[in-house]
Image (tube, one colour):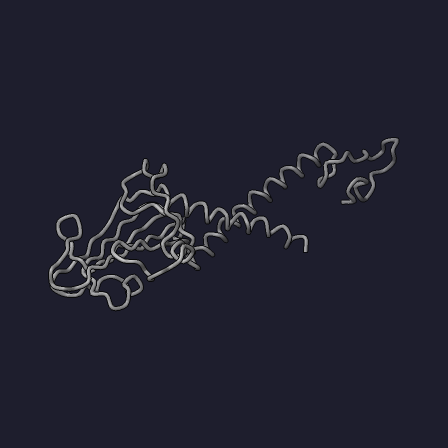
Amino acid sequence: MRRLARLWPSAAVGVLLTLLTSWAAAAFGQFNDGNLVATYESRNSAPPAWLTPEGWDTRSWHATWGPGIRSDLISEQVWMGSSLALTSDGRRQWTVTHVRVGYPMYAMRWLDYASHLPEEGAGPLRRAWIMGIDIEGSMSRLFGPRRVDRRLPVRPIALGFAVNSLLYAVLAWGLWSGARAVRSAVRRRHGLCERCGYPRPVPGAERGPTPARCPECGA
């Protein structure tokens, strides 16, 4: 039971570090590579199905990424030169950007709709769940090229969040256990109780033999 109680702080640290690393990537992450797949006369079948909203006639897929961050732009508009361009064939011109953040795995995400809202009449909480918390105008503007609006995501990616949290929890537990081992060794060397640091009687001294348990904490 005591060992289980010791795991909870490490688990909480793992979750907290996963959240903080994801938010740091969202606020300050920089894109250093990318790839563009665009079509003009027919539907673009290159983007993964989960990226493309149902019923969209997708033409452009622009992926950019960097350490701890990735952005996938999906659009019904065609790509002309270095940007999207409207067409005049009567199709809808919808665009959505999927942003994923986290390290070592993507753990959180948000959607950035450039041309329409994800849900008509969505309340502020629902909008935050889908589109994150807008932090434009903050210090994030000072860091790197702005390819997407800076937002703090609140929507986790289940697998990535679990893996990152477990990894950070193991690291936290290892550091904590190592610090405890060093502390115990130092106390033992100086004749102190390894748990509470209370001075232990020295064998053969006038106070009598060393007791089996610490007189202060009972360890």
